[in-house]
Length: 301
Image (cartoon, rainbow, N blue to C red):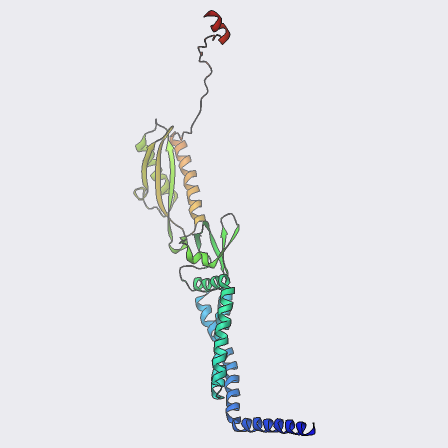
C-alpha cells in the first residue's frame, strides 16, 4: 500500500512538474494570448459604439442599432478568442469550438426558426429607404401609419386609432403599398344627377367648383369628368382630380370638402341629386273570382 501511494505521488509530481515546465516554456505565448484577448475585449466596446453611431444615421429604430452593435461586439470578441487560441497552438481546441458552435447554431436555428425569421426581416425592413416610420402604408389587408419597426413586429396605427401588429416576415412576403412615397394623390368622386338636368351645365359647374375649392387644381380643365351610366334614378358620373397629399387621411379630408362644396353649388343652381324612391300604390282593384271548392265541383259533375 505504501509503495502504491509513493508511486501515485511520484506520478502526480511528475505530471505537475510537466505542466509547470510547459507553462514556463509557453509563458510568452500565454501572456501574448491574454493581451490579445483583453485588447479584443476593449476593442469590442469601441467597435460597438462606432457601429451604433453609423447605424443610427441609417436606421431610426433604436432596437435595431443596439442589436447590430452587439453583433459587431460579439464578432470582435470571437475573433480575439480565435487569435489567442491560435497563439497557444490550440488548433484542435479551436476546431472543436467551431464544430460545437456550428451544432449549437443549427439546433437554435431550428428551434427558433419563426423568431429568427422575424428578426432578420425586421433588420432588412429597417434598412429599406422606402419604408420609414411615419409613412402611410397598406399591407396584409390593413392600412395605417407606421409607428414602429422592431426586431419582431411591424406596427401600424389605423385611421380609427387602432393598433395593428404584423409579424415582420409577413411584410416581406406580401405586397406593400406606400402612400407616402409620392406627394400627390388622386381623388375619385362619384355622384349622380336627375334626368331633367342640363348635363353640360353639371359638368361645367362641377369642374369650376373643384377648381375654386382646391389650390392644387389650377384650372377647371385639370379636372377629369366622365358620365358613366344611365342609372335607375339618375345619370351617374365619375370625377377625378389631383391634390398634394401623402396620407389617406388627407385624401379623405379633400374628398369630404369636395362633396360639401359640390352639394352647395348644386343647391344654388337647382340641380337635383336624386335618390331611389319606392312608391306603394293601393288603388288597384284586383279581380278575384270566387273559386269553388273541390266538393262543389264534384257534386256538379
